[in-house]
Image (tube, rainbow, N blue to C red; front, side, top):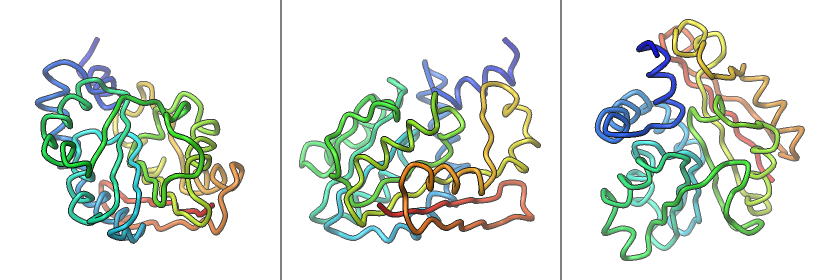
Length: 208
């Protein structure tokens, strides 16, 4: 396996010491701006019950636990290493009931219907085994009038990166918007930022 394929596999599912020590930090650094933009658009309030699908290095979780004073933040991730790291990093928040993290796959979210006020995922949809089924699951666990956001780098930008040729499914902003509409989301809108930069920021938002 070449270095490009190795990095692509680690981006898809961080594993081993490299995933825990290196990839988690890299994800937090590269995703910092898009995390901030996504959370700003979601308008998370203190009482909200929030879910992140694919929390990776945990930078969004860290931001969220300071905002949800009386609410609850939850995260699911397919990577055992990322879950273990989050359990260690956020031990205090977990112990006092502010945060829950667990292994989970977007096509089989381990939650009952309509319980989250806000749901988001950042740079994970490229790896979903079935994008329509996954988006349907996000819709299922979102409360009526709740808001969900899917943040990505556009297909145009991702095609410039060699890792995207190994196991990525790329999406345009319209692709994600159409997917959300097909799975029952209302008021779908696209926020596309930094189009002239190496990494753009696409946040597609919809309500149930």
